[in-house]
Length: 373
Image 1 (cartoon, rainbow, N blue to C red):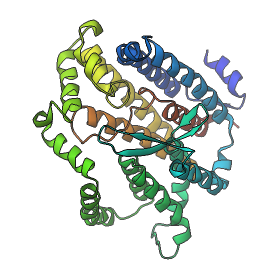
Image 2: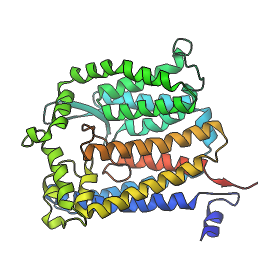
Image 3: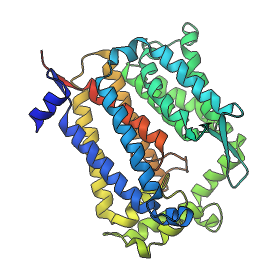
Image 4: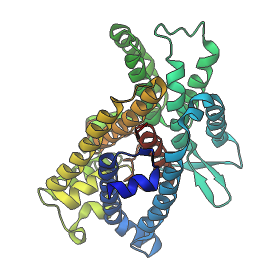
């Protein structure tokens, strides 16, 4: 089997089959969970239990195609032309604010979210694809150990534009992921840990100010601190998430008797991990987390063998971004951090996120190919 795949992919190179195996089992597990998590809502909204599940399968097929393309895509092009790729993605990110192109969705608090581009029947989130160009850009932004905005201010402009656009959309969770990845790159480059901690401490008042500036964001923090005080209103979602874990117990509960599957809002997107626990119980959660750990361990082993600087940093960034998003999503579902609106990679419903992660994993597998001379 391994010999056949080698010949199929390239006579002089092969992808790591262990990483690919763990990733595909994780993806299949995720699709199975989505089918369960979205079925009741799909029936009520579309009279079809598998409406969202079937659409997700189509996105998987498109994602697999893009992953296959990037398995062969010359990585050196990403290194050489990262600016062009970055500028294109920034333009897309800013188009969400253009009337007629950007798609605005209003939540129940009458707050406008400008996160989508709508062209005909096609709708997508450009922020999901910006992370690809962002991860190609960070190795260049953090190239010098003693980073200076004053001396390299032109190189920093895209960084601040991306953060500002994410703030205005708003996409605070994604913005925090971008910042965390940036700090990780600084650590890889040998930046002083003491300075990084100092920057974080000094930035705390600024982030508190940004939180207070948006009343709904401050409300989310209050709800997170005591969700049961708001259980019949805005804390309902988090309380229902807790109930999903409780009802799931060790072996899970049947969907026909599941309260969470009926009433947990965003159960097929932001809170899909809660419904996983409800359907599969502690055993199912353990197996899911084991898959994630295996992906990380194998990915880490592959990254250690990379001797090209840009490739090493890009592959590290891809694995880190994936793990950070998983951790943030699970932390929200379990109440460890306030709600952020970030889905579970490859599992939550949504085409933009799914395709972008297939591209990233295609690049990762491309970089970590075993090459023979």
